[in-house]
Image 1: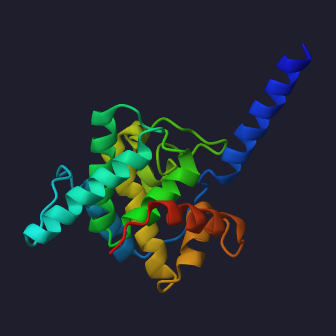
Image 2: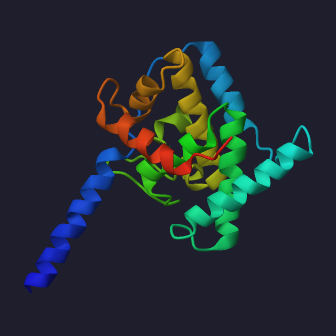
Image 3: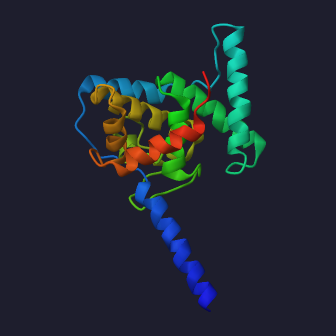
Length: 201
């Protein structure tokens, strides 16, 4: 009985600690140009096929993919799922002009790499995108936020927008992404997680 109670308390604590970080982006007024740009970015349904400027870039990508796959094996044990996830993260982060390690760190904090994660405030998927975004810049189909590439595309596009709004200040952009702008806990958690996913240049 005591062991069961201890386990329940520990599980609740773990759930709370994860849920405390889960995305709670605020719906903000956007200029029409920003809304159109985000909407166009989301509508681009091309598959995540990497394009390389030269052979050295292709080799570096393969090295990155192999290294990240090894690091992520415990969280995503299925090799095909893991590789598709990493390929999509690489594609969408590069497409948005974001560091892939930063995006992987944010996903670690937001959802612990759970595709079907739902926070207490309703944020969904790997990057914990709030459903209102599907109305603001998408086709209002909230179920698409559980589609891997769609979720990553929304999350990367939104973070890129926040970085632009904050003139490149990553600390403030991360706070805005989480709905906690100006508070240190969330940005610090993501920046700390980012360290694990950095790849040597």
